[in-house]
Amino acid sequence: MTIVGNVQTIDGLIVDVITTIVEKPPINSILLMNDNPEVLLRVIAYQDKYLAKCINLTGSNKIYRGAKIITQNKGLTIPVGDEIIGHVFDPLGKSIDVDDSQFAQSSQVDVFSEIKPDKKYRNQDNEIVETGIKVIDFFTPFVKGRKIGIIGGAGVGKTVLTTEIMHNIGNKKDHLTYFVGIGERMREGHELFNTLSEKKLLDSTVMYMGQMNENAALRSMVGLTAARSARYFRDKKKKNILFFIDNIYRHVQANNELSSMVGELPAEGGYQPSMYSDLKKLMEQLDSNDNGAITTVQSVFIPSDDLSDPAVVEISQQLDAVIVLSRSVFESGILPAVDLLQTNSSLISEEIVGKTHYDLVNRVKAILQKYESLKGIIAVIGESELSQDDRSDYHLAQKLIEYFKQSMFVTEDLSGTPGQYVSRENNLKSIAEIITSEVNNGI
Image (cartoon, rainbow, N blue to C red; front, side, top):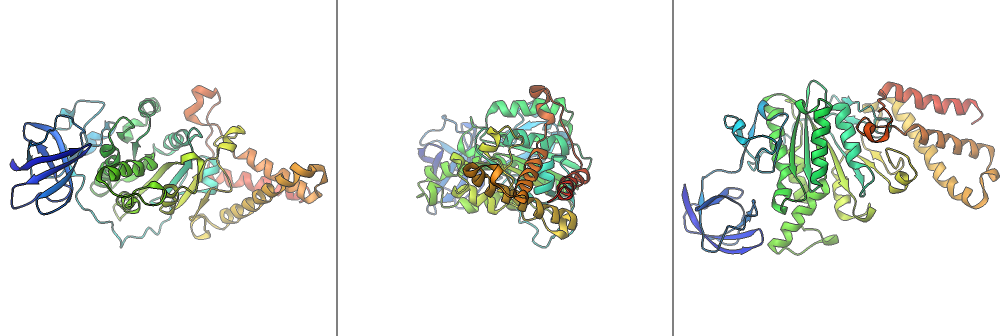
């Protein structure tokens, strides 16, 4: 233990420490309070060569002005290894569901150690991960190693859809599933833990929770903590990782709170000026290499259902595919409540999904686009005034919309309807048959 200096000022979670040693603690190192080592301070910047600006990670109110600060000359370490699978951890790597002594002999990794992504790696396999959910496998197929977003406002089914995807693909033998809860309700995390346990999926899942009861410092770092743990399994255990985040918008929000505490002036939309780099730090940790792939599914909250919100736009730009959930679709009783026209994917190409799938998506999108334009006309003059071709296209679109409805396994207990899994092959076949039957009937 080395005495670093003393606390000069305390402003919420921001603590300024006057250093008294020549060799200053590096950025991202962890400092402790001498008479209360449970207080953890993360060095985030130096205002001058003596003044270290730190974040009080634990949010402890036991810290006081003049307190002696010490260093262990290391960063924040968390346990990794097979023994952590099936358990739940907080952003500091402390176990939530069992005693920490169970991981005393585990390997340790430093959360904030700088790991640069492998820029030389290029995934040429384009392996599609089947989810069994018709609307997703058709419009936004999951490709191993890519990033997918589920975007929607409050209460439109983001968490339910995320949980269903976990249920359907989380039991693949060569995959390890990570679930990261950022700023969401504690109840949802508890329910997910019970659901995974009941469905026998917990044995292949690691959970990290930084829920809404935690301070902004912990909520901002839980994603990084989980990503560092996932990289260990990818590189040391050669595992492919399915990495679920609920909710990535809360990661931006937590960093925005910290930015305000530090005194930074807000940028567009009231968000922190470092929003892009805050997101990029996390996204770059979720990369793939020759050891394995990290495929991410990120739910994105839309403030006031506004898709043009700067944070939502920034997040969307860093994703390969975006599944948009619509409140109007939800209120019409269609589940999952996917907006079929707003939903899009850069992975829909002949090289990745094949010519048949690619052509079908373009055909269905064109039908749905015409359906949207016809709805306005019908509202004014009525359906009977449409031409025969327009009426046929309108009814075909309605059949397709009805087809994409699907009951969920994770809501069986609530709905009383058995869950449904549809293979990608049968999905494409069914859509082609719907279109073909209408063509044969006169389209």
